[in-house]
Image (cartoon, rainbow, N blue to C red; front, side):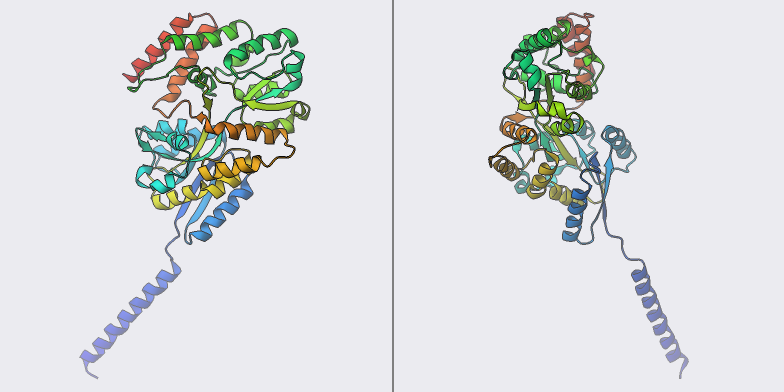
Length: 426
């Protein structure tokens, strides 16, 4: 055999060896499947089974995609997601609310869904609810579950005060608060003025006809309507018709007072009735639900939880697909029933309401759910997504507190809150 032939054979076997090595290498080191990291807020262990099945179904329908679910405590979420976004280690899909998410949306932290969600998909959601996760015409979140406040009330306590039905308006609330205090020695209502807690007072201003900011982002509440709304809460406090702890305690304290039988009315989501049943069964037995208290505008609040996708994700298509799967009508309806919340798609809302209307004797929880669902048609996000919304709330609450403590006049408090906001936005 010539040297040339031997060389050719050797080269051929070398090439075959290299190919075999490459094939074996590929088989022993397969390309990893994409893994989505999904963060929720305090949904374990109550909904572990629901999400385990949900994720399993998605993975079966999307072979090769894995989902890792991480549940974060409610009070830790803001800090964790802020740190993760800053460090470029954010999850692929995260459960937030539009108010907080809008703070990061202003810094372009989230994926622009205008380019990722088709008009057909978008039309499945309630229009006002989709709009809640929009900033400067850019959609940054996909609606998930909703709650509208209801008025949970202690029938025995109101009866002792000679009151037949709970108040429907803030005007009626002031009258009920005075009567309950006079007749029973208890308070009718608790609403927090702690800047970092509930936005209920901020929303009440909108319900009373106050415009918070104008189209240019400047303060619009230094008006007769704004002064009247500030005066309303100042009067209730200075007349001793609100517990003094409204200046230092959050909404959790309202629940505690109600469960102790020391509060006639509790503005909360219907899901809190379950908590009351577990913690204070005696109070739960005399509790019922009515529509939320509102102002002259008739506006009613809805709270939205959404799913956002960090712009830095390296799996945007899979993340959007998973977010749409979690929030589709079938899955929303199942979660709404399990969690005593409301869905946010047109189809799921219709089905949810239809099931509540089936008749028969209803429990207090079912009654509250029905009241809550009925309000959806009129409900809206009263404080829309805007840059620095938390700072606006802080300025208004701090100046309201100063007026309540007689450190400022009401007019001065309104004026100084507006000026401080405008200086910040300048």
